[in-house]
Length: 157
Image (cartoon, rainbow, N blue to C red; front, top):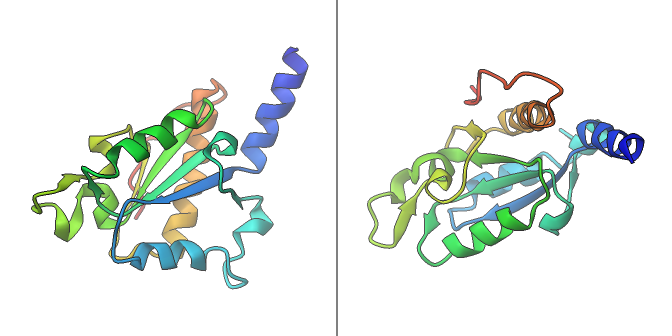
């Protein structure tokens, strides 16, 4: 059983499966996440696969400001993901609530609802920074597996 588990963990670290959830935003960061999948950046050549089911994902990309209506959905998606998992908050809205943080129905950034491992700043965040965030999230997953130390930098420049 240990051999199979080691094989699965090795595969997870070489080819992360990412699920993207938009909490509600201007869609600027969503466009940049999609840009990562285009031939210009082509993250699939690095083994990064975008999946639609959180039960298959290793990394959760969250864009947009968390509001009272979608915080339960975000928590539910997080709870469905298998351990070890990593969460990336993308953009100013995902990190802190952005320009919407003072609105009556806004909870704030993603870290107000679920634990965040990596923050990718920007409005919108650049595709290069998003890809770097996924690579850092892989280091977090590796650390949670006990195969490495936790990365010191969790805010991507």
